[in-house]
Image (tube, rainbow over all chains, first blue to last red; front, side):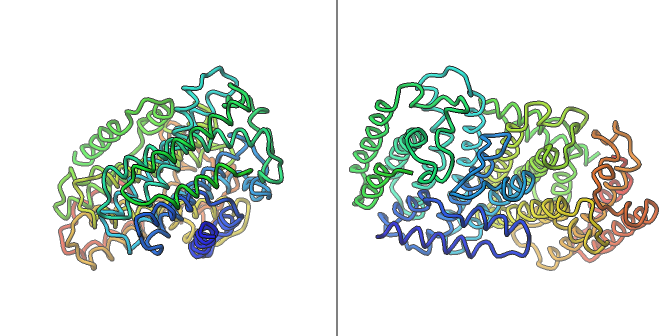
Length: 284
Length: 284
């Protein structure tokens, strides 16, 4: 299966990035190589494949978005943040090597993401600059979204507010992952980028609602972390606002809209549609 | 005074970068605009001036190194790390708006540093890539250095070990600040870069030893933070290993060596020598 190939590819690539001689490097390996769906890198490889971009050119982009994602999980799991003690079926980073080192692992991974991308010599400089700019603004929005998320615990908010929050917290980096695949093609159509942006917004929101539904319905084992953790923390979510059934309808509808929009692309989008359909069916 | 001009210039520029509509932006303003010596940006402007680089081209570099420096201070001050409750004569970020938001402010500032530099349109792409690469590897080394620093609390280490630690924790970003000024000149001599690298290593180490001496001798008011905080934490430092007087000799000697090396540059280094001499005399 092609998605499994992408997953293995990014895992191998990530493994080659973490070879320095330091304790921090070992902590990074623990957190980065623990598994995970690698959904963001797979999105990048898949989108790039639509535009016939060579896989070798995609590696640094795929690794960079995953490194930023993993740093955000490590910081989100900290006691001062979401206080989650399990991640990917193993103790969270701060449980494994203490809060201070976990903070630094996150900090170092963010730096490493930019280093990997800035050093990707097989991507022409003008494109690399665009990618670095997008990664930076997406990472900023992600932090901003997490800041808003923490500020609304136990507060009444409406669906519009949740949408805006999710677009930053989850949508920004997902959008980056998708657009990376297209920006790697130097002569990409502006219209294709716009369609992929809109597609990303739909599936970014859908992905977060689906996560929140799975947090209620999933098992600890399949999720790799504690189930029902949002509810216990008093976090407003789609399920808490409109119920499970309506939330399911909402995310399925959004995935469907995203898929429809892909028909406007100048290239055959079958691979990205297949991936999206696979995500709709996920149970973790 | 030219250094005061650089300081005001980077302060004004930083002010223009923090204008988004969000709580995180306000927290960032609190931490970034609280003052501080702006030593790193001043180093960048000063080095750039040796090579006749326009000030306008230096702004993004100067801001980026300062943003990375400030993010590192915010994270270092956290209870899980150095647990310092005062910084720049005001409550540390986590005291002002809580640990979770302080972590995110640091995360967001690191992202912003890369965004500012990647978006600096008045720097040609090939140079911007070099700068981004250096900023990323320096930020990584800084986190690695802090990780080592925390791991040796209450342990016996020797001066060689301290030197290696300081070169990462303090030297990496100082070296980045100096080299930024030179890399902005597209046709810079490799020999000049090598001399500036060696100069940075000397003054990076000197700066850290001097910080540790001031931590013992300075007042809370002049330091803007609690005095004697290293000793209380059981951190090995030059003063704790070889005493105050020998430490003073060590840092003055290193600054002197750094200044001597500048005589090998292909350009007149008077401004950078003046800056270094000013730093030798600092009391905070």
